Amino acid sequence: MVNKVHFVVILILSISIIINLFPLPEIITPYKPPLLMLVLIYWSLAFPNQINLTYAFVFGIIMDILLMMPLGYNAFLYTITIYLIIIYYPQIRLHSYWNKMFSLLIILIPYFIMSTFTNNMLNIEYNLLEVLTSIIISVLIWPLLFSVLRFIRLKYTV
Amino acid sequence: MKSELHFRGERFVFIKLLVFLFLSIIFLFADINLKYSNEIRTKFSYLIQPIYLLAALPSDIYKNISNYLTYQNNLILEKKELEKKILIQSGIIQKIPSLQEENKRLKKLLYSSRTLNSSKIQMAELIKVNLNPFHNKIIINEGAKKNIFIGQAVIDSLGVLGRVSEINSDFSIVTLITDPAYAILGINTRTNKRIVISGIGDNRKLIAKYIPFNEDILEGDIIITSGLDNIFPEGYMIGQISKIDRTENDDFLNVFVTPSSSLSSNREVMLLW
Image (cartoon, rainbow over all chains, first blue to last red; front, side):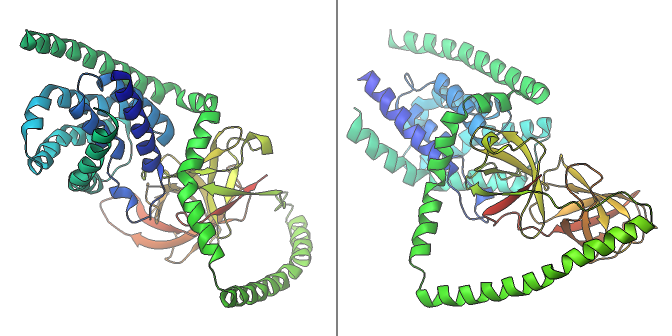
């Protein structure tokens, strides 16, 4: 059963990596939500014992290589975020469907702060407003993503 | 029992967190200083390229379908227009040999040795993949197999695009001129003065650096490559000066340049030798 969980999760994460790379219209691109991280957050909420920091780190490194970011950038951010999920998953799970959006926003605030911090440290160009908007958008798409992934989880895993 | 397990797990997680954070910070600083992520990407390029191609697939399919569904009337109209364009352009090109002759003679008179050498051109196509929007990089579908080299100039039909920064066997990565870590030495065609053009990470804007207050510069001046940086051959369009900001507090003028190449929307690019 555990192996099946790993298999399904790796498959879904690989698909979301490819979706993350899809070309979007120029206007939307800066506001693109960090899809892979949202999917990782969902799976670590569902299986905190199996989908842990190792996943976050390895997929962060893969993302860095594919997106041509400095190696370790996404790994750093994913690790911190998934750590928060693993620490607080009992509380977050208790929240209702809509309250989860709010708790996601709180989980994503450290991500936002750390990403701007690392951007500043490494002299990576960024636009504060665009990063903020992408986080708000990721909170807004969370219910949809949640129901899709929940459907997949109920159908193919436990 | 259960709470104990939970507690032990948490401590273990914290150690893991520290290890991974430490590792990623080490990776980050090593990568910033040694730039080894390019080598890693080159090593795994046979794995990476299929992913890029897969990600580019929807836009390719969309393009093919829209090509397929174009009405014949539209195609005929477009063909006529293109034929007209070709006629006009070949008319202009007719004059080039005589102009080159004239140019050579004038250069001889001036004892100048620099010439506009016509170079070999290789077409390449973009692999449309959504990278970090602030990174100013594009991926093209030609690589080391076509003798592309690092630092090679890349242009499109309207102007200078950037230069090749990373080569793999089947694809390579082009850094656009809008990259902040990038500068070209251009020439103002009106005054023949040299001018340093640098990117600021914005697709629609470049900045001209270190221009003193008394410089003869106007909005609308056209800037071309100078050929002095040994990257871009002489005479390709960079852009047009769009705005001059004369703030008295700064040491230099703030001059903005609109790039002439369509940096965000092109599909075919040209590599120069």
